[in-house]
Image 1 (tube, rainbow, N blue to C red):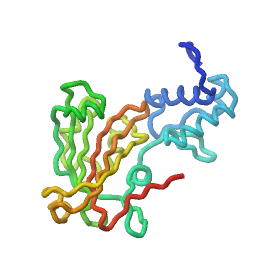
Image 2 (spheres, rainbow, N blue to C red):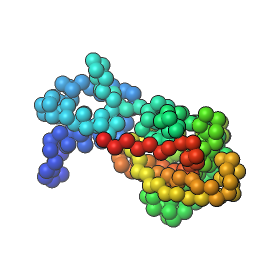
Image 3 (cartoon, one colour):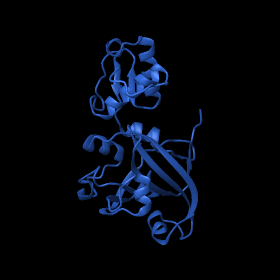
Image 4 (cartoon, rainbow, N blue to C red):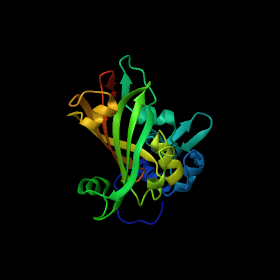
Length: 243
């Protein structure tokens, strides 16, 4: 299982999971590619298939891999449907999930603010790319969104035209830059619509909005995106299902 660097008191399956995750993060199995069979991986690491299977089960629960009955295990790959059900939590009043359409207003690079440096774990003076856009649900403008990412991690994103910035950005991060978002942390609070937001969302200035402050993380648990969304909930709910 590799060169020992000190005692590891984690369960064996957890150690195997960490090793497999490292290989995913290194790009050994690109998104959508099949991993070796359970038998082959168990033999490689010198563990039982039960131990290997438990490691893969946890990785599936964290959406690092997709396990398909009779076909094997695959490195997880983003799709519009996956992004919708995993990361987009606004639903219609009847509970219907709708894939939003996006209109990019601005895409530019600049020096990171102190808050952006802290959230994205960047050095002082680092450059970031900021995307401003409005998202529509069934033709209605519902969300004003500001997205910030490291220019070093996404080196030419700031040169993309509005039409090149895809609707579901996580697909673009993965396909174009090899950065897979696997989880996010969100904070919510109520805010008042600014004059500009009111214009874009067709509301009155000062109308109540839901602010979603999201930090997205890659396979290595490193923050790769800061996203602040101001959402009109006049006709929508934020749905969080707790198991």
